[in-house]
Image (cartoon, rainbow, N blue to C red; front, side, top):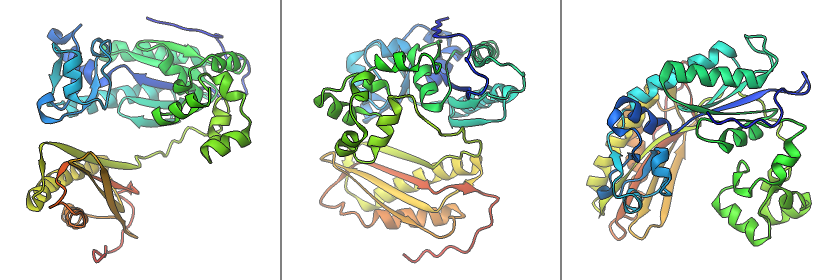
Length: 369
C-alpha cells in the first residue's frame, strides 16, 4: 500500500476532520475482480471503438497508455490496440458494491456526502469510534473495503473538503495522504494548478498564459486581479490556493441531475428515428430515477451536430414530472425544436434535473409549454 503522511494526527481537536474516499478505477476494478483473466490487463469500460463510443473508466494498466475517461474509444484503441473493452457494463453489480462500501462509511459516521457510486466525503470530527485521529479512521475504512470487497480505495484526510479531495488524488491508487493546517501552505505551494479542485483544462490553459503553474504562483495574484481575469470564480481560486473552504459535508445531498446520451455510428437526420432513440434513453433514465426514488422538474435535451457543434434545449415546470409518458412527451417536444433535417446529429442526450424525493407531494403537471 502506498502511504504519504505529512503529519500523522490533526493538531487540534477543534479542527474539522474530513475524509474523502475515492475507489480506484471502480468499474474496471470490479470487472477485473470478477474475471481473473482481466487482471493485469488494460481494461476499458464504455462504448466500443467501432460505435463512436466513449471511455467511462479504465484500469490503471490502460491509464499507463494515456487513456482516460471521456476519451473516444477509437483513440483509446489506437493507444492500446490490445486493450479489452467492456461494452456491456454490469451496473447492478457496481451498485451492489457501492452500497457495500457506503455501509462501511456508516459504521464510522452518519455525516456522509455521497458524490457518486465510488466516492464520498465523511466528516469524522465526531465519530462512532470516538477516535481522535482521522488518519486512523481512513486507514481502517480502506482496510475494511479491501477485506470485504477485494477492491482498493484511496483516501484524503484534511480539515476541509477541497483539500481532502486533492489529497485523495495525490497518491492513487491505493494511497493515503494527509494535509493538516500546519502543512497546507507547503503542500499547496508546490501543487500543480491542474490539481487544485475546480480548475479544468480551459482555466488551466488560461492560467498558464498568465504564468501561473503552481499554487504559489496563483497565491501571488491579488483577489482583485483574479476577479478581473476569471470573474466570480476568482474568489474560489483565491481561497483554494490558500486552503480555505468552509463548505460543510452535506448529509442531505442528492443528485442534481440524471441523464443518458448516445453517440451514433452514422449521423442521423430522421426525426422519427431520433425520437425513437430518445424514448429509449428516457426509459433508461426513468428506470434509474425510480430506483433512486427521485423525480425532477427540468428536462434538458442535448444534441451534437455532424460538425461537432453542440446545442441544448430545456424546460422547467413548477411541479415534478410524475410518469414516464409525460417525460417522453416533453423530451420529444423539445427535440422537435431543433433544425435537424439540414444538420444531422452524431449524438443525442436527455437529462432531468431539479430533483426531489418521490415522497414529496406534487401538483398536476401542465404540459402546455
